[in-house]
Amino acid sequence: MINASAGAQVIDAKRGVIEAALAARGRKGELLVCGPGDLPQVAAEAAAAAVARATAVIAVGGDGSLNTVAQAAHGAGCAMGVIPYGTFNYFARTHGIPTDPAAAARLLLDAHPLPVQVAAINDRVFLVNASLGIYPELLQDREAYKARFGRSRWVAFVAACATLLRAQRRLRLHIEMGDTVRDVQTLTLFVGNNRLQLQQFGAEPEDTLAGTPGDGSMAALMLRPIGTLSMIWLMLHGAMGRLGEAAGVESFEFHRMLVKPTLAPGRKKVVVAFDGEVTRMRSPIDIRVLDQPLYLLQPSGAAGTADTADAPRTAA
Image 1 (spheres, rainbow, N blue to C red):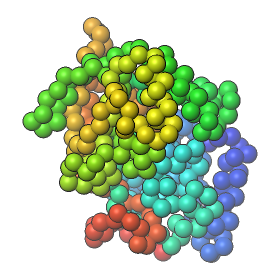
Image 2: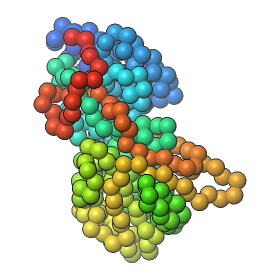
Image 3: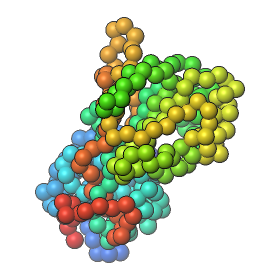
Image 4: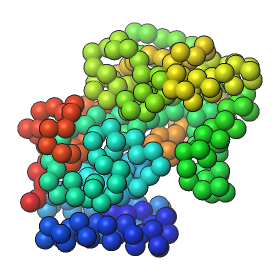
């Protein structure tokens, strides 16, 4: 399944990579190309067909496209494969899937469905992260910068700096985690379900709970309101992969968190982001590790796997 937003030339290149990998092994597959607006419906139909045929649905794209397909695959109970075509590809890299699309396509032909942790923010599945506050603004700014200057990690970094330097809006949050209740003021609440991304931030928490981010729990980061000079210092820590050491950053682990933002009169929804997508959700915001894993096609012997007795079967 290919997201058509990249343009015809890129789509043809993706199609060629996949068809070549299948042809080399005498295999066949059904390639579906659709626009971003149609992707949820097409993904749901493809997942239902995969269940009926005892096979898997394959997502081709970045973490945002993968999220939409994962939502459908998780709901239908079918296995999912990944051919990464994004900027960061945190999900694929975390699970040992090559970032070279041809290598990833070849790997799928010998892969097996293995369980990986997924989380939810209200009724939406997410694979990598979810957030409130300035992080959704950062994502919107990043897309604007990419449209103007192209896709690269440096463009993403410059966009992040621009967002952070003008960050002023404070979130007032009532947070419930089991018996723990807190009222906090923060610039952003960031929840990580991906150890690789947390490691790159330098914000990987100590294992305070049974399990770790991606293996039983998630990590949360909160940024307290700070001045401009402190924000510049914070960005330097982040660029050096030492965000967790910066003053004003609090981190903790959790299984489930209920977040109730203080909203302006008449407002019932808050801006949230998950896996690079930005939307509005009705308060309260329920963020939790899901009991049911996603079955991801991975190489045999992949690290961090669990019992596969209940894994969906895939056709040979």
